[in-house]
Image (cartoon, rainbow, N blue to C red; front, side, top):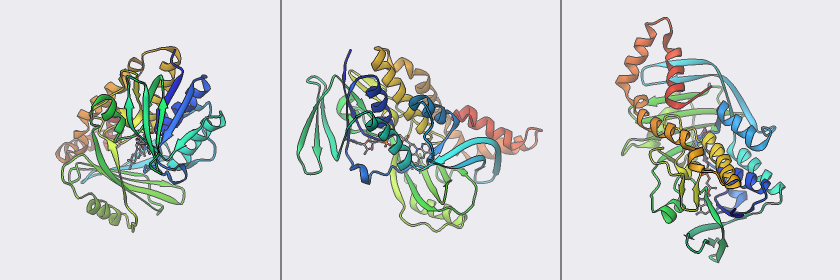
Length: 347
Ligand SMILES: Cc1cc2nc3c(=O)[nH]c(=O)nc-3n(C[C@H](O)[C@H](O)[C@H](O)COP(=O)(O)OP(=O)(O)OC[C@H]3O[C@@H](n4cnc5c(N)ncnc54)[C@H](O)[C@@H]3O)c2cc1C
């Protein structure tokens, strides 16, 4: 059994996997390119029931005191419709708190995270990875198996498997919460979606586009104005499209965003990060097949990648919701059905 595991990236997936492997007696080296005190992942921080269940399974209990808001309803909008959706169970979290919790669980077991070191090269034959520190010094790390948890632009994916990750740009800003409800808006103009997610005193407002050549900044600023929000400090981050899932290549395991595991029509990645961390740890501990353990999730992501287009197509959305309005079920049931069947959104 391989015992020395190198994990590249101390985001949610890397820290969770590090914790689970350390708990199972592996020697874990966790390397993070950013300095831990400066690390702040751009994220709406919306946690679905399935992600919450994964948190519970991975860590034994859900972390206390980090959840900011609980939502029992939300608004789903298109260019023409605004549909309130009730009886849901979502919570929001600030990613700094969630990622900090996972990392702390690892360090409480004696684990060490080497921060400020960017892994630039992985020699799969010699089983040695080379990193460059902030001070330009070279560091080498040996391993039996390597876990790539280095996010949507995964450099490791290119180095190890020669595959460029498929990711799109998203924008997000932290704003003062206005009291407006949780909101998702799908539009053809963006060929993507917007979100407004309250989290205590603050809220995350953002957008992502699968279309080419969209002016994200202008679109987001218009969306903010429509909610009466003044934005400052808009930041950008890449998010996988979900179009190219890669789970394993030789001795390298790909997890979370690095694997391309995301729900394309909703951007939900926290669930996949936690699940892939748990499955990779399980596979390594029991010499099981990680790809087989994740096969169903990978298939779902690939299917949802194809069907995401429906959410951005104005003609389809308008006619589907208008037709639903005329039935006894109404548009709310139609939206819930769509979320469940096209986003695996089990809220
Ligand atoms: C704007 C935005 C909003 C989102 N909102 C939600 C949401 O509301 N709910 C939800 O479920 N999901 C959301 N997601 C998706 C979710 O944030 C991701 O799927 C999740 O963070 C994946 O975690 P990860 O650990 O794989 O990647 P990351 O959190 O990106 O972690 C990767 C880590 O690897 C490090 N790294 C990168 N390269 C190297 C290297 N060469 N060497 C060493 N370290 C390296 C990075 O610094 C980083 O710390 C959102 C994503 C974005 C971009």
